[in-house]
Image 1: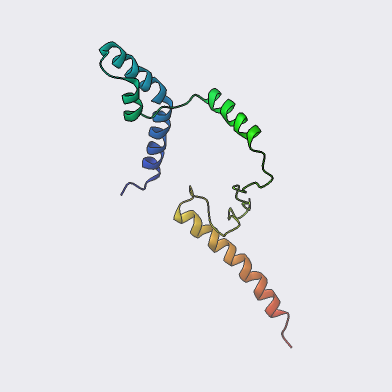
Image 2: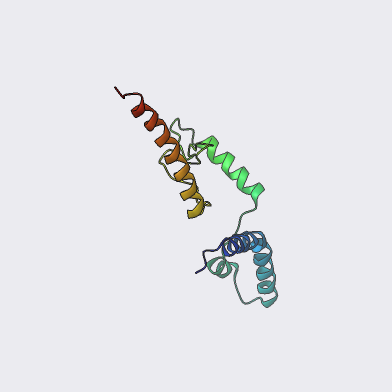
Length: 125
């Protein structure tokens, strides 16, 4: 039942808010545990996921790239037709709903049907 655009948007925004607030929550948790004194930081790492800031993450990624220089690159980018919105496998984007897909498919079929009809008409004796 939770498939409406509104619920999808709310779920997406909640996930982004979680990502944004995660470092603050972790620092708050660490400060609370420091006051308590009994708990160790290793226990905190077991309980909570430690999020690395973007700046440190970029530095680490650069170091990894310098260490590993391979000529083999994995192609993760999908090639999508801008007019039909189909990718190379004939799939529509994730965000497109079934009604839009059906409409585009019908338009494509109609266009393809016209070209076939004209070719058949030209073969008349």
